[in-house]
Length: 162
Image: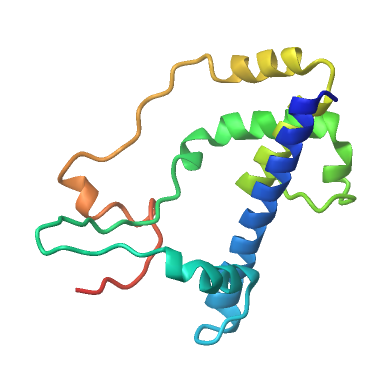
């Protein structure tokens, strides 16, 4: 493995660990301890909060965001094909001998990146993946009217604070 791939693997590992900590925090706050959660992410946020300052001015416009299940939802078939490519090269994942879970997007990205960095035939792997996305896909999205309240199957429920 060359020097660039080693750095890529290190950065990928750090990104993956951070994403995993976010998932652990999400589980903690949703299901275990809503008011006094404990998490590495919270500890780090407390440490850096003094640097994250932004003044809000009366003339600025802000928008509310919603959590959508897309874009991954749009590519279910393609993601399953990529999952099969990963499993072909890393069969231990399917056998339960790995901590990676290919139902999780971050884990899938990490495995794919490792595969591309580690394998000598990464060009053929990339060609295989590119073939998956060659067919044209219908655009999915909302127009201005629909964007205010998306269908319930496209976004999770929650409270709106006015």
